[in-house]
Image 1 (cartoon, rainbow, N blue to C red):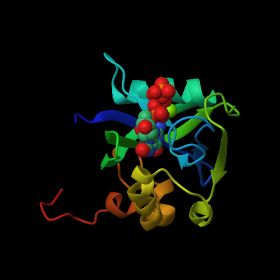
Image 2: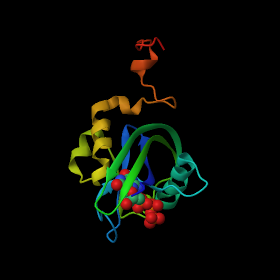
Image 3: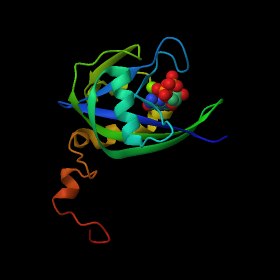
Length: 154
Ligand SMILES: Nc1nc2c([nH]c(=O)n2[C@H]2C[C@H](O)[C@@H](COP(=O)(O)OP(=O)(O)OP(=O)(O)O)O2)c(=O)[nH]1
Ligand SMILES: [Mg+2]
């Protein structure tokens, strides 16, 4: 089965990250996810995310760098989930195409039930800890900005 390409936004604002609860009707109902959706023909993943986040939450975001790619087979479909680090640019947020949304700190992540494919993303966020809020548009944190050389000297 060909994978469906899905984008997901890890939206940061003031040391918090937004998670969205899926609708009551439909697949994975009432589970929590990083909002986003299916890539449409002719759009880039970044365009897809900006569109989806406006449609689902009425928020404007800046899409920075890819955070994690998850390939996950559900019983009825396979998805290639592209999650990106994003920053909030504006908007209060409205649950337009989700049941609810929350801005949560790292300490709250364990209190929610996530869509299965998101577990590796949640795990990676928790491994990063506070450094998740430092990732810049090149995917760097202060750790790799201040001159810790990598093996190939870059
Ligand atoms: N948006 C999003 N979808 C996810 C995540 N994890 C995960 O398994 N999915 C799955 C659920 C869906 O089967 C599939 C597509 O996501 P979606 O339902 O948000 O797609 P969409 O916004 O384009 O919605 P629709 O137009 O098809 O109603 O990806 C996630 O973190 N974010
Ligand atoms: Mg969606």
